Amino acid sequence: MSLSPEARSLAARCEPRVNELARRMARESFEELPGYAELPDDVKDLEIAATARHGVRLFLRRVGDPDPDRSGNHRVFRERAAQRAEEGMPLHLLLRTHALGVYALWQALRDVARPGEEAALVELVDILLQSHPAIVGAVAETYLDERSALEAEQRAQQRSLVRGLLDGMVPPGHVLLDQLRLEGPALVLALGLETPPAEGPVAVRRRLRRVQTVLDHSFGVEVLALLDGDGGRVIVPEDCAPPEDLPRRLSRASGLRVRVAAVPAAGPEDITDAGRTATEILRIARACGVPPGLHRLDDVLLEYHLSRRNESSHRIAALLDPVADRPELVETLRTHLSHQQDRRATAAALGLHPNTVDNRLAKIADQTGIDLSSPRGTALALAALLLRDAES
Image (cartoon, rainbow, N blue to C red; front, side, top):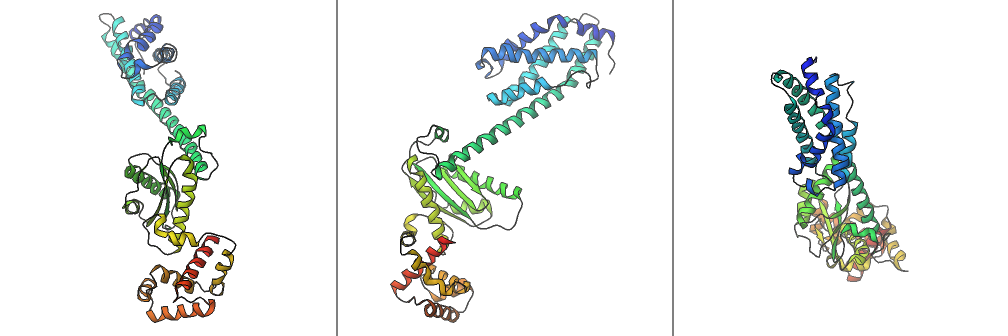
């Protein structure tokens, strides 16, 4: 774009006013923006004024050489945008400073224009408005990239702290735990998602985002979650009880059947043990064939006790060795116990005839020596299943 000598002459009259114009932008034009007045004086007088000065000079260089490839780049704008993002300045405030800067530069051009230079003023405004979208685009892109990187770093650090706390690697009272806002009682959850079909990482991430959203909405607070494709562990930083329909909400969001084990923690020092207990409750409920839903320790209290390992554990687990290579017998036993030893309910769950269930149970009793018709035999079979499941 070729500029007239009148337009170049008009722009040249702004050259001596660059520093004054930049200071006025930083100290007057931008003061009307909400939140700008709270910025430190050195940020206004040094960084913001310097950015405004760079913008004015970049415009004047473009007037002298309208080819954007030879009139400078947006490096300074990008560097400042990254700084503002790191400092937490809102993006809308940053972009509005650029918009007001354009208006202030237009005012300066208008003030030095003389009668008869209206056409020259239009030429300069045309260049000013042409260059503004590229600057705004560079600023917004850099700001969003920087915020995204910062947030990803913060999430990774938070996940590391949550994992360390749940695994007992970060002791309660550690200074870093202040970032997790854990002071009083909390609720620890273990989630188990039904194994989904083979899918790509994008689909997994979308499902986990939906699960996180449901958890946040259900408890009215941003929960601390370690989630993966199979489920995960969650800390709710409040003294609360889980909604009874939480598994249903999560199932609707994820498209999968969901188990939730919930254990309260009296304080941060109890979170590690609560997390281990919740994980164990989830394992036991699955091993016993309990339908997906909300599980508490009282729901599997006997099974939890029977699954504790001691010097006799290996001998109890070995009771099922004779049928270990017959998965259909083991699954029949598991289903029979989870259905309160109701042969018809067991047959319906497995899609078998009740007589087939009877025959399988007879083979189990014959090969293992466990009398499934007695309370003692039932307890032995249940304990053996739980202990073998813990070993696998």
